[in-house]
Image (tube, rainbow, N blue to C red; front, side):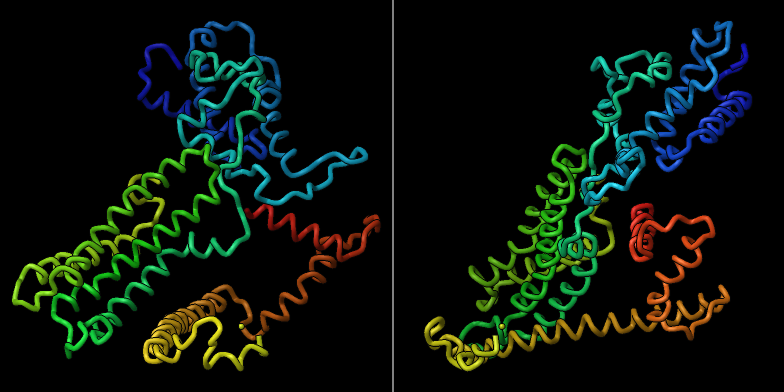
Length: 414
């Protein structure tokens, strides 16, 4: 920085842009972890501003940035995906959840706790050094000790619950509201023709409790994807503390209305509680359906057995026969719920087809080629267009080579 220039003046801003572009231009794979690159830029800028740099007479050694900063990070990222066999780099046969990828490296620089994990070879924390000295210590950083998995990319059905919890809440809760209000015969008192208004309101508004239970299940499932040592677990724990409170607010009035006082004696308190429960349930359902969970509460059958279905005396006795009406009604509700999902999904498919067709016309693509033909011809296209070159050494079968290209593309996209 030139003498007499304040840090916020245009000269310094232009100098910082130039410094960042210089860091970015030689960053190689570190460009894919922009949070890390910003941290490098900050350390470089602190060093540039320091008296040590300003009073330096000789230039820094050529290639210092590549050798001390970029190369160690590049080697760490490379070793996560490749290993040396017979003098050649071969792709690791590791499960993706065991590979520290770009996202994990990037997330280390999201929080002060992550940056505090960066230590030198002598176990000194980088943040304990004066800011002006950190950049020149990058060649002594032990990156293997600093980085770790921040999210486990598991292939499991729990992904449907964690990542689509708002879809489940929106559909199942709305279905509960509609069905419970129009089925008072299920929860009315025995010997009474109809349920009271308070009971109708309260039973319907248990949809808010349904939304909360789904959110709690999604939060518990999310714990299986995040290491307990990472910062997000505090956010999940905070969410699990607040969700039971929300569940209690949604279910408490129902206990009073259905057990203590259903307003059959003319009391107005049950109806008032049910109306209050209505607002709580609607607010809970709307918030759980609209706000991403990460931004909530702070950032962050066998054929031979069919002959026994009519009675199953050994297991249930006469239970199924005596509760035939309730059993049939439960099946009907399940079918209504399935059809409700199918109806909304149908419109999703219809509009997706409309927009996809329009987008294909805009891109100049043919919409008449079946997707099946495109994907069945994809391996052949990869081999003929990418792999089959004149100077290619045929050591592996085409199928093996195509699989390597396909796996590399998948790993690069994640």
